[in-house]
View 1 (spheres, helix red, strand yellow):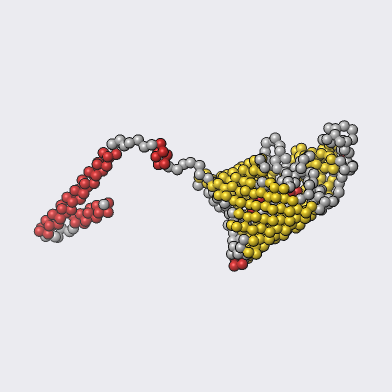
View 2 (view 1 turned 180 degrees about the horizontal axis):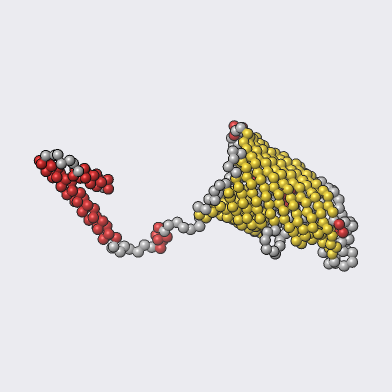
Amino acid sequence: MIRSSSRVLAAAGILVSLPAVAGDAELQALRAEIGQLKAAYEQRIAALEARVQSAEQARSVPAAEPSAEHRSAAAPASGFNPEVSLILQGQYKNMKDVTERNITGFASTAGHNHGDGIEGVSKRGFSVEHSELVLAANIDPYWRGQAIIAVRDGDAEVEEAWFQSLAIGHGIGLKGGRFRSGIGYLNEQHPHAWDFADAPLMYQALFGEEGRYKQDGLQLKWLAPTPMFLEFGAELGRGADFPGGERNKNGAGAGAVFAHIGDDVGIEHSWRAGVSYLRTRASERESRFEDINGLEAAGSFAGRSSTWIADFIWKWAPNGNPSERNFKFQAEYFQRREKGSLDCYDEQGAGNACDPLAAGERVVGDYQTRQSGWYAQSVYQFLPRWRAGLRYEQLDSGSRNFDANAANLAVDSYRPKKATVMLDYSWSEYSRLRLQYAQDKSMRGLTDNQWTLQYVMSLGAHGAHRF
């Protein structure tokens, strides 16, 4: 109707602007035609105004009050509607019964434990090993949030709870809250994404048997606008996780930086390499030691811990299609140095060498260590649903200076080792069953042949895994 009105007015304007050379008869005819057009136009306007008036009167008549159910259904959607997923992960484990299981030559990440040693690693038989409830959603066009609640045999913890930027631009990403640190390669991956049923010895020695270091703090990443993948990141956090410790102080207790580079080689190969550095401070970080007489001693460390990690991963898939067959190789190496003081004491009153006179007294001395380790693994998918994997790993307890406690504590060099093979079957990307065998020589004088049968089931929304 708007276009029709415009055409009428345009025609009228053209007609009235005709040159005055036209004859009187012709001019009269044109004026008559214009008058007819104007009359028709005014009639259409009047009809439209009548329709508008009728519609307004109809709206003024009160309608029946809708029910609460109908009001709720008609209301705009503004409720909380996140992506929800549940990861079910459990296992059956056959292994030796070892009291206070640990990695010889490395500080116990479980603290001074008189029970079953490292939780999870030491649990035999059936167990609900690690399950996760994941809630995630975009907050608005600028931010995204995610929370992960981890459950292990009745205990629940907030494993992650973070917000992440979506619209800063220029390759910049900001994350805040509790998150898995971006150091190394395996650290950011959750257990259900691992290729083996447990974390490598390297990660257990560095961060505990759960094989991860998480930050309560901020993370800043920058993805460079280059043809190759090039990423830089930095973090500041509380530093409460091992090798740091809980501290009631202002500021940050840990900092980390990392860089990753990667690229494709043709259509069948891709790779990524990285280097990371983590520095934390600890205060009263408890660990278990053995004195020169074989008795148990407790140690409380205060000082700084610095860790370097180098990682590499290479992937192959024929014609770039990994659904039928693919191969993955990954390896990581770490070196950790710690420097500070160690309080050695007899918590049990057993009369160990740290406390020859009375329970509760302490021997304080300087403490320095330089330790390293690595692992390498490969996984081959030889059929669409079948994979096989092999992992070998070795640590080096390195040099350790106990200063005043050198006469009290046993200081022996040891290289923990472990070899693992696995076979798994996946009905789909959401369900997997894995059989694993490992020969574990992480404790001096003990060879533990371990069998693990593990299931991993994913319910609900499931995001893609990282490279």
